[in-house]
Amino acid sequence: MKAMIFAAGLGTRLKPITDTLPKALVPVAGKPLLEHVVLKLKQAGFDEIIINIHHFGEQVIDFVRSQKSFGIRIEFSDEREKLLDTGGGIKKAAAFFDDGQPFLVHNVDILSDIDLGQLYEAHLHAQSLATLVVSERNTSRYLLFDSGGDLRGWINRLSGEIKSPDPYFQVAGHRPLAFAGIHVLSPEIFRYMKSFPDKFSIIDFYLSLCNKEKITAFIPPRFRLMDVGKLDSLQQAERFFD
Image 1 (tube, one colour):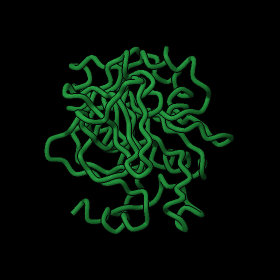
Image 2 (image 1 turned 135 degrees about the vertical axis):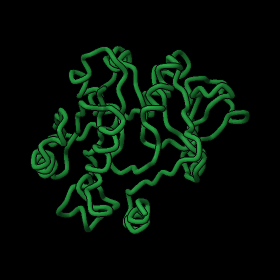
Image 3 (image 1 turned 180 degrees about the vertical axis):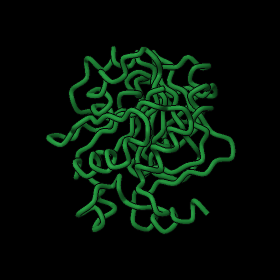
Image 4 (image 1 turned 45 degrees about the vertical axis):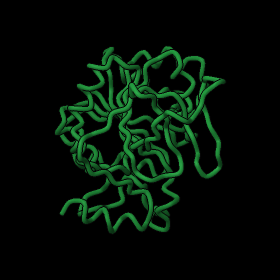
């Protein structure tokens, strides 16, 4: 099975650590974030991984090579000249996903005990264009799902901004859930991405299609998840593995 790890971010919320180190190599419990994610994917059966790189990208390459690619196939999608955002990053890596099978995308700064194999099977069963791991955690931005678990819109509760392809969309009656940075995508997405620019958000991409394609929620039962994107979360992340 194939997967992609988003590791191209600037890591600005982790400064000053990321002044000399890419976010992917920030250590947690004695291992870089990237290693935690790679090993979790490998344990779930993903044996071909592509990692996008930008900030101190050569450090990421050197680290993976020093670990002999963890005994699996690992390639890199080089965004050092230009960051392509989440959607553009997936589009650039399209040639890697040449087997016609769904693939998993995982943010490098997300730690969880989610069963990724179960997520992949849920995606196959739902026959969706994409299956998104979501939860009821507190945040300012939420994806909005209907009673059947299908994506219908997005809201920023701080600004009041709402996005939906439906001009008559009403927030009421939809369930607000926070995206966890883990999703499984069917290869048909690349057909739609042809009309998108080199740089675009995967969330905006999903929102543009959710009125004609099935994009579903996956809410893991009793799970732990941590976004290790800020300095104050690093200490908490150390306790994640206790």
